[in-house]
Every structure is written in C-alpha cells, then in structure tokens.
Image (cartoon, rainbow, N blue to C red; front, side, top):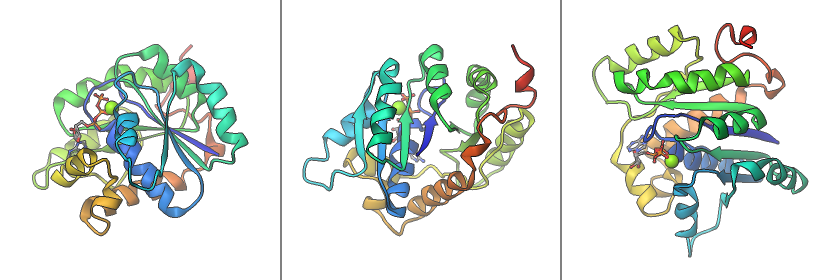
Amino acid sequence: MKIISIISQKGGVGKTTLAINLAAAAQQKGGGVIIADTDPQQSTYRWYVGRKDQTPLPYVASVFADALPEFLDKARANQADYVFIDTSPNSTEESLAIADHSDLIVVPCGPSFVDLRALKRTENILRIAKKPALAVLNLCPSYGTEADQAAQALKTLGLDVCKQRIANRASARRAYALHQSILEFEPTGKAALEFTAVFKALDKIKVADAGTPAVKGARHVQ
Ligand SMILES: Nc1ncnc2c1ncn2[C@@H]1O[C@H](COP(=O)(O)OP(=O)(O)OP(=O)(O)O)[C@@H](O)[C@H]1O
Ligand SMILES: [Mg+2]
C-alpha cells in the first residue's frame, strides 16, 4: 500500500484538487484507492458526499489526523493499494505527523512569487519528515515563463519538481463543483491527461526510497 500525502502550508494551491484527481487516476489504473480527508474544511469529503448517484469511487473518509495510524491499519487490512491524504494548510504539527506516516509527499505549488515565498513552512516539514517528495506546479498559465522560473526556484530549494505541470483550467473548477473527478468530467481533455501524467510520475517513485531526504541536507537537521 502506497501512502501519498498532499501537503502545503499555503492555502488554495490545489491540495484538494490534486488529492481527488490523482486518486481518480490511480483508480483508473485499478485496485483499491482511498482518500483520507484530514482537513477540517472537509473539501474532499464534501465533494464525496455530494456524489449521491455516481459510482462512489474513489472512497473518501473523513479522518482526524490523530486517528490516521489506526485508519491506515484498516486500509492496509482491507488491501487498499493507494491512500491519498488531503491536508490542512493551517497546522504544521498535524502536517508533520501526517508526513511521518506517508511514503511520499506531493507539494502542490502555484507559479507565483507569493506561493514560492510561502513554501518556507512546508519546506521545514519536508526537512524534518525526511520522506521522498515531489513538487507539482499547479494553476500554471498557458503562456509566459512564470512556470519555468518557479520550477527553477523550487529546484534551487532542493525539491524534485514534476516535469508534468498542471494548467489553470476552468474544467478543473467545474468538475469539483459537479462532484466529479476531471477524469469523469472530461475524460479525454487536457486536464485529465495532465493529472494522469502526474500520477504516473508519482507511481514511478519507489517507496522503498522512504527516508531519502526531500530537501538537500535534510538528514543533518536535528
Ligand atoms: N488546475 C486548476 N485549474 C483551475 N482551478 C484550479 C486548479 N487547481 C485548483 N483550482 C481551484 O483553485 C481553488 C483552490 O484549489 P484547492 O481547493 O484544491 O486548493 P487547496 O490547496 O486544497 O486549498 P485549501 O488550502 O484551502 O485546502 C479551487 O477553487 C479549485 O477549484
Ligand atoms: Mg483543500
């Protein structure tokens, strides 16, 4: 079972959007996929609850962060293949505990100076957690060099950056409002292809690498 948490202490960068759509991409591959929503805002859980007449996949559970270990034990006993964890932007302590239980951390980041500057707190979590991590640039404009510059800035911070970026697309917002994943809303659209490609990149990362510092020099931080 692969445990992938989506962590950023910056609000509105796409944690919930990535949790839902990466889980949907994992679901498409086959196997058991669960999302644990640990954010008190409950955006992912509400998305799931609104899916009355649709196939209830992926399954979303509302989980208090301090109950996560027991929840993961249950997921493992039920032979889940992937657990995605949506997190709150507001609790460093909780995010750190969640990171500790994860095999892999996804860090969504917008390609703006404001988002990059706000990465400091998230970077600290990665440094302490010492888990493999992949930054994913989200909400990218379809033109200009902002995303290239952001990728370079993330690399300078010592983060691995996913080659596949996710563009700012109205379809991503509409799909959430309709309680659908982007793969249901527009299965052959560009957004679906982008989320699927990001999932494939994540899936290639060996979880046996757990313990590799996400940020250069992380092992030396006490
Ligand atoms: N690629 C995208 N294209 C268009 N809109 C997007 C994209 N990603 C996210 N959004 C929109 O941006 C807003 C914030 O996204 P989301 O809720 O996923 O962020 P978040 O990091 O989970 O926020 P919070 O920190 O408040 O939990 C939402 O309205 C969402 O629909
Ligand atoms: Mg959210």
